[in-house]
Length: 185
Image 1 (cartoon, rainbow, N blue to C red):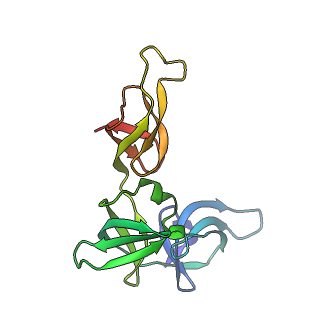
Image 2 (cartoon, helix red, strand yellow):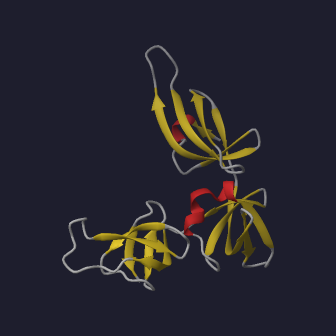
């Protein structure tokens, strides 16, 4: 069990049988009152973001979240299909559960599935992914008035700014946490 001072971003907790991921936490204490921890939580089953206030002596149950290496197969009608790389079982997750991670997924990509009570409830991306540049304007030498970047559309559909030396067909590495260009592969 966690005491409220142990509730940090990135930890998984369980309330009323539902797993939550702590996105943000702020400790607070007003004069003559008990300490409290204000947390922003993500429901790992539905993807909904909720705010919760934990009181001073409250104990919070940790969620037993497991990981399994899976491969993204395809998207169909807002459902994402994955395959377990050990058992070759396939499962689907909804667009709401996948959330912003969808913009980094391409067919055949390997990611980690989050498991709660042996059921997949989400995915965790690696810190960087390699994506192919599908469309971008040619870089003109000396055109640095805009900071030396240009927009590019990647194989996953994501659009971001890349340096002028990146061309169509290049593979680049993108930071999945910030959504920014990292390097050319």
